[in-house]
Amino acid sequence: MELLQLEYFQTVARLQHMTKAAEELQIAQPSLSKTISRLEEDLGVPLFDRTGRQIRLNAYGEAFLARVQRAFVELNEGKREIRDLARLNEDIVTLAVSTPRILPGLLGAFLASHPDVRFRQFFESAPEMKRQIENGEVDFCISSAAIEGIDIEWRPLLTEEIFLIVPSNHPLAVRESIRLAEVKDEPFISMNAGYEFRELTDRLCREAGFVPHIHFAGDEPDVIAGLVQQGLGVAFVPALTWLEWPRRASHRLRIEEPACQRQLGIAWSERRYFSTAAERFRVFAFAYFRDVAKRLVREFG
Image 1 (tube, rainbow, N blue to C red):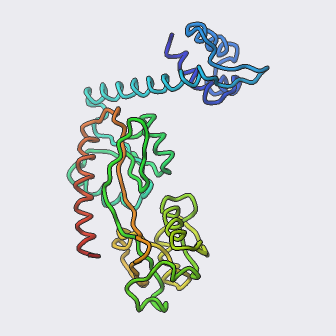
Image 2: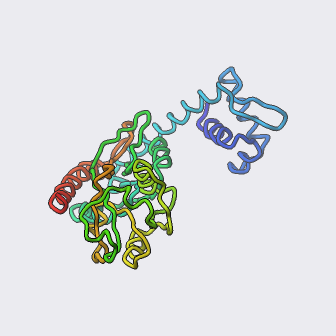
Image 3: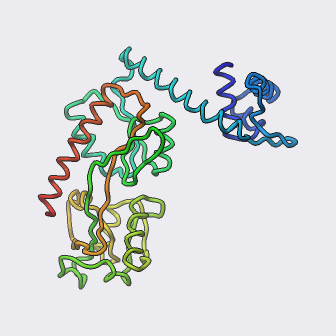
């Protein structure tokens, strides 16, 4: 059994199509078919069910694919460890996040004391980050949704309050707090569907007994804040984002009911080999967010 056979098997299993797999691998289809057949002969069982030109991974193939994927993860981790021992990649940290607004402060603070470290960053959804962790593509994921799976460690970093902001001339601007149900008829300005924060705020509205009327949806918090300031609607804002905004022409309201908060956490694979830089970043991240939590307490009580 050769690594090339396993790589070809992974591709065929992913595409479930011999011709497409051959095109992606840039080899002739007969050669690919022979390679898969030899692999099946070595194992003593078929890995695919074949009906005419159609192929489908069978129970044997699914079980073997899971083992093959884990084997390649281990091989890649071994390569990373050797490269680190040879000092070829010790200054690179790969990071996926679902809340990119935390990056400037976090990375800026870390790089101030570790200027030689380089970061590769990805902005992804929680399911995609889980896949990246499982496949060994990233060192860490920071998300507001817990990432769970075999050999995945997820630990909380920070719990932050979520506020509602209204235009400064809004009738509610004379208040300090509200129940969320009080704004059920208001036009909402929100993040686009698919963002973790949008999913969270939609859930909070459902808990309060209503579905929000979304008058505008976007992916730029600063634009959302600007639209609120222009009197076009109300919006949710996390505590950290509120602190970062230089101008506050809108009014912040604490939400009494339901409890509105989100938890940021960091995830990694327990099978992952960490470079010196990655291990330092993990330690630093916990300390950084402890300081941020203290700052939030000072600001909001």
